[in-house]
Length: 128
Image 1 (tube, one colour):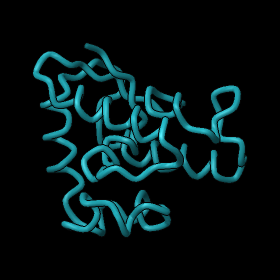
Image 2: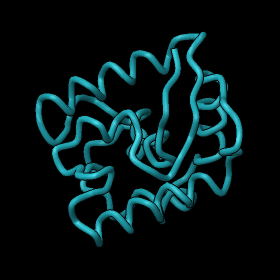
Image 3: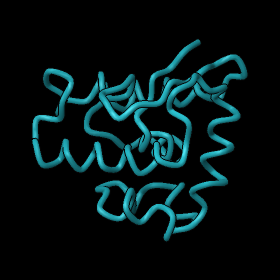
Image 4: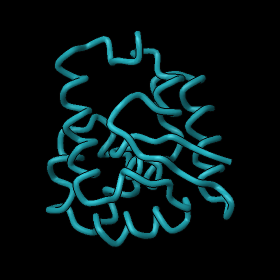
């Protein structure tokens, strides 16, 4: 199985516990979260709309309908991507292990998570 994931979604998936914009989004996110835990799953990482975004009600023409929000999302992605190799496909299990080791404090994720509307519910952020 192959996934395409935005940089910041590598953090979101680790803290996901069923919250989302609507039922379709939550269902899609839950399925992607299940798939990323399979040993044969590969992940390509990007700063553009990904497999999670496809179910987002705020996505139009592969961009967030709020231009300011879209710019902030890309900035969050780029912060994560600056610490990972985005030019190759990754084994999902190895990638998420590296993400957990790399983004292991609130200081490491402050530019990514601090303004996120989900950070109070996010298990990844809460454990830092």
